Length: 154
Image 1 (tube, helix red, strand yellow):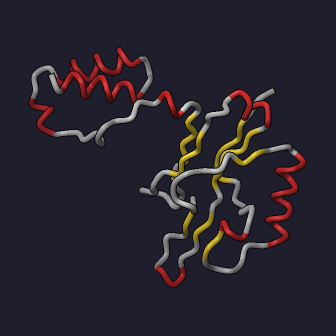
Image 2: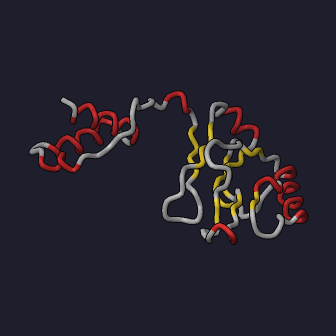
Image 3: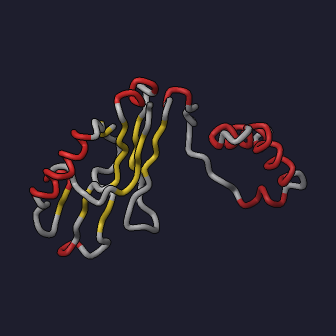
């Protein structure tokens, strides 16, 4: 049965996954890696920032680690061979969000970043355009933004 587990595992798998503070515990890394082996779990790797957590302290006392990851079994990886994990930039948390894209080729690329313009609120049909865009996209958020962009540019 295919399955995936993602989130904060609170352990580094290698010494490369920790920067600052005391060295990563060799015993803890060994136990974590043994668990991965015994459960036949694969780490999907990532793109984006190397570390997923930091203590948010100043530079002298800064500690950063890769604690968040996406783990799958072979059956899941065979079902989603194109899956990609992206570490997104941190905003208000000590952890960065992780994004699991099952089929990244199907995600349309925007030619430029989407920017909301507050003047759009003054357009008489703004609320209707937003509602129509979300309904037409059928819970595909990226498509909703694209539909909305198309409606606004008309």
